[in-house]
Length: 231
Image (cartoon, rainbow, N blue to C red; front, side, top):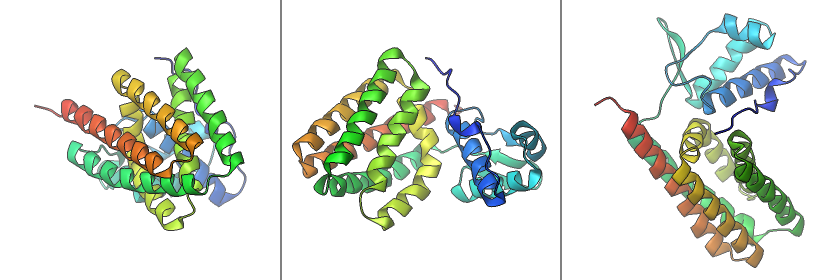
């Protein structure tokens, strides 16, 4: 699998202190999602500060943000370490995410504007190109853009905020599931079905497809995590 494309987010740091901390958090979050920092890895302030060419203060603030997201745990002896979801926890989180995203997709489809469908068509076409050429990191990033676009335009801020908090913990799991070849093929077919339902304006079918899509991801992730647990 090709993973030559690093996250664009690491290119340039902003100038405002709060923005710098958020930028650092986004960089670290992306590294955790894509496995540069695997479960158990320590996040060392001094090292991150040198790598990203920022002071230790925004790094410290970024680590607090990741802790609030549930991505890392902080202890006196080991410092900040990346956490791993357990199989049952993953299944339960995606049970909830499936409900939230299917509701968001249904509301999105009910009020779908032509320009929104056009944006999704472009994102979907780009994702399919990345899939065909085997650029899996770019595929995942564009896939995430599609999910995020639907969430951001569902018109329900409560659903958006609840989903955001859960997805901070679950995005790494979604990446792991999608990288499994069988799940990747299934997921692509589900995205194709979603686009067909959106074009037809069938909000109920959109919700049904999207709920199954997220449940399948949760099932795949739970299976992978169970397989990785020590006997």
